[in-house]
Image (cartoon, rainbow, N blue to C red; front, top):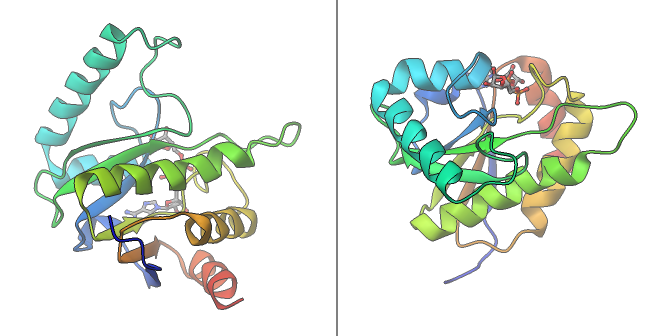
Length: 180
Ligand code: AR6
């Protein structure tokens, strides 16, 4: 596996309209869909994604997943991308932000594990949303710092890592961290 430095790029918009080898979903442990990016990916990608998610859940249960509740926080798995302009969706489960315990290693793990899965698949371009910054309430500035420092520190054969931010403020915050 060649491990040059990936190019980090930034786009403001809807991640479901991106063209990439793999699009990362900010999912939840159930893998059965939800709101935010997750809802948008399932809506635009169509039912094939949910079908594979159900099969993955079943195999996680058979494998004796200790939590017995699907995909643990910080891990990642891939499915088809259905009708999205991508080959795969990589589903990862971000941590809910906490003011009492530091869950940043779990957020970093989402980026690292997603890139590990991307490498296994042979993906060259990977689009990430700002994991945990919506329903899971992670402050965007801290989430952007963790995202950027983690992908910079991860060895990967992925050639382009694209951050896709829905709103202008998140875009500006990520731009600051990428520029620094
Ligand atoms: N494209 C790009 N970014 C988006 C899009 C989109 N189409 N839609 C929302 N965002 P969230 P989380 C941004 O809530 O915080 C779901 O119900 C959004 O503005 O999607 O990891 C799951 O099922 C925010 O900045 O993910 C889980 O239960 C960022 O994406 C839970 O929410 C992440 O917001 C996961 O929460």
